[in-house]
Image 1 (cartoon, rainbow, N blue to C red):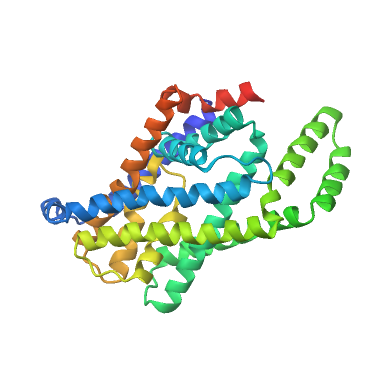
Image 2 (image 1 turned 45 degrees about the vertical axis):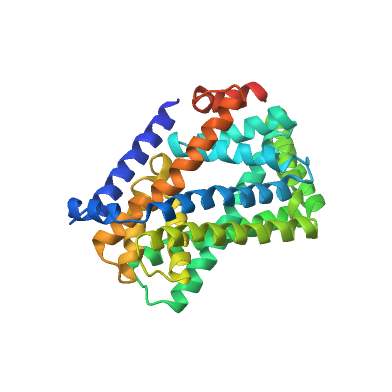
Length: 334
């Protein structure tokens, strides 16, 4: 790990600590524990199982985006998705995504830069979907906390600009390639050739946005993925006897996941709890209930996929060391 990466990890941990302090301020621990004990365990188990099922939709979207490069079996993609989640949940700097890139290269010979481009496209579509949830909810619900609005203010231009760039590259590949070629001719030979090759991989990696079927499949599965995942949050709310309507849940899912843009510790601990509390108290949920809910729903979406990801990784003959050495594996494959 480089010095810069160490600084990023330390900064992320500090940010998580700050948000944890904010999330647990003015809290009565015994009341939180009592509230958690009274939750319906059966519904929590169902919620955890449902969350794992929704990873199939995540994998299907990846299939649509990768299809123009390589048709990878959905079962293989599901395993890699779970491994990616596991890596991101327990290691800093999105190490799980890097390992996902390496493994799909090793097992299915998909160029790493193309997979990287596809993963970036996934994040952009996620951002657009989550922004949709938040904007629709804000127009319908009386939730105007500064924290919620700041998430929208920061995220909207980022994802909007990225989406425009991606579509421009995807819909005009020849023009994009010509512009790239003109630009790289102005650079020194070795550097220009390197950037030209990377740029061509990026343009090719967006092939899934050029065909109507793949584009429709990507958009549909992006919305379906998050709407189905929101049901996990609803099931946990029901386990607590918390009367959250689906629109409020969509707002919660949108804000909490967009807040993932904030660099923090693996699994977004602290940031997740902090923004969950902000949203729930903003719609009238008591602080104790909101904090207990935040802790439990985070465990429900964190633990099962982390365990399953580790199992899939072990079945491939790899251990957790593969996650920590993901960047080294990338350099070996280049």
